Amino acid sequence: MELSASEVVTHEFPPYFRVYKDGRIERFKKFTPVPVTVEPKTGVKIGDVTISPEIGARIFKPKIDGPGQKLPLVVHYHGGAFCVGSPFDATTLVFLSSLASEARVIAVSVDYRLAPEHKLPIAYDDSWSAFQWISTHSNGNGPNPWLNKFADFDRVFLMGESAGANIAQQVAVKAGLGGLDMFRIHGLIMAHPYFADHEPDKLIQFLYPESSGAEDDPRLNPKSDPDLGKMGCPKVLVCVADKDWFKPRGVTYCGTLKSSIWKGDVELVETEGTHCFHVFDPSSEEAGLLRQRFGSFINQA
Image 1 (cartoon, one colour):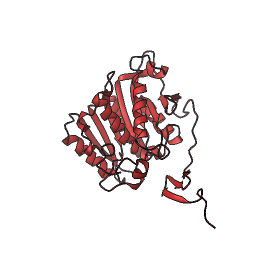
Image 2 (image 1 turned 30 degrees about the horizontal axis):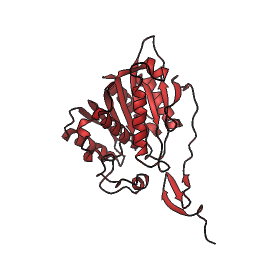
Image 3 (image 1 turned 30 degrees about the vertical axis):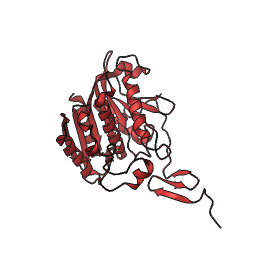
Image 4 (image 1 turned 45 degrees about the vertical axis):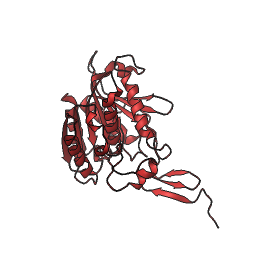
């Protein structure tokens, strides 16, 4: 008996999703939002915001020591190959509440729309729109009271892991091209960054039909970006892991920055571990040490 269009698989990309002939997308891992107001282990308060009908974010605020205290602001873009992940899931909750508590920062994790339902470059566009929304709080008159009152816009950092690091890099470049006038990004944290290689990535080609899926796409690899030298931050921390097969791409990124006309400082840190271990195994000793490194980078500002 011939299979129906709802049963015929046309594409399959484990461990992420499969696509059926009728257009239905089946994700291999189900996502359940974690609705919290206070993270019990750290005491970090959680607030969810709607930026637009398509974009949201989750804000992590640690305990404030006294009136008038402002903390560094970390704008976070989650990983997940542009097609999975969320600011509202358990892994992001544990990672960012721990970072907010230990490093004493306000963290905002952006909920950009995911491919393949929303093909790239939508994730990049959403992430930039969210950053513009965040920037409206720099004068203390934005729509979110926590950002108005507690975020120090003289100490703003972009951060991402894997595909999220790729997005954060793009936001930094766009800001440097004159996209923001209200404040300057102080630093960029790239954890186990994903960049395209010389061989086309079949998953990325499916998620991003306009792209080759290879290193000649400036969004996917900074070595092909003519605007890289205008990146709008003075320092970058690149973290790689010894057992991560993306490690060479992070190392190459450092070399690309150093050889470009960008005049900032880039630091490379290598640790033991696998890809994004600090997010997936946040209680490990190695993850704690890496969070300390993030905090040191932020608070040296």
